[in-house]
Image (tube, rainbow, N blue to C red; front, side, top):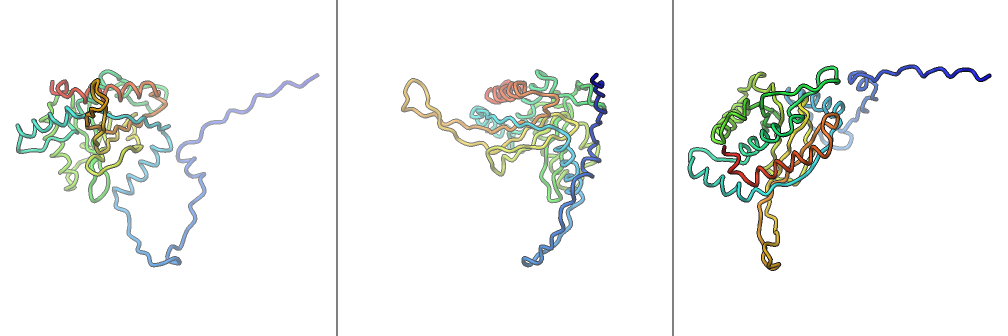
Length: 266
């Protein structure tokens, strides 16, 4: 008679701390044996960012969806806005924020967070957007609150003020907390695409690179070429909460909103 098969013992998943502790340490290397070196300590912000980003990358299953938006009309509108407001430069970021808010309203799972148990999704009824700011001390992400209630001009002024405050070491912890969704923009530097790391407990982040001119055949005449200004978009999302089709629909809506910028002025 065959003996009954005993069930396998339950295996609990290791915590992040246990998983990190189980990793073998990096070998110590004497780099001076290969040539002259100089050792400088990381800033406190860079050390904190390193720990925070490492945790996020290990604990969140990241997927990045790449797309692009036709911002030809948006560029023309920004120039009109700049003429009307000569005291301040109008960038693409305020329009991006308004487009993202529309996306969060249409797809509320992007404006949510997993609770501590990981079994429930907390949907937020507010729209606070974090903006990654490059400072000499490291990356900071101040949060602009209630973006659904602010105009392009108001967002533009607040962006300028909070970015200046970040670079002048004037941000408080409260000003960097409570975000629903973040934007990381490399538009002033370059690149074509990248994979931004999600700013937990958020479930998505949008990366933006520098816009470029794209030739597109125009009209029935195949010899005619239109030059469109295209903005690369890179959306990283938490695959536990968002699937690929939802991410594609979200970025498609962003692209459609940015292609018709007048709708973002309302």
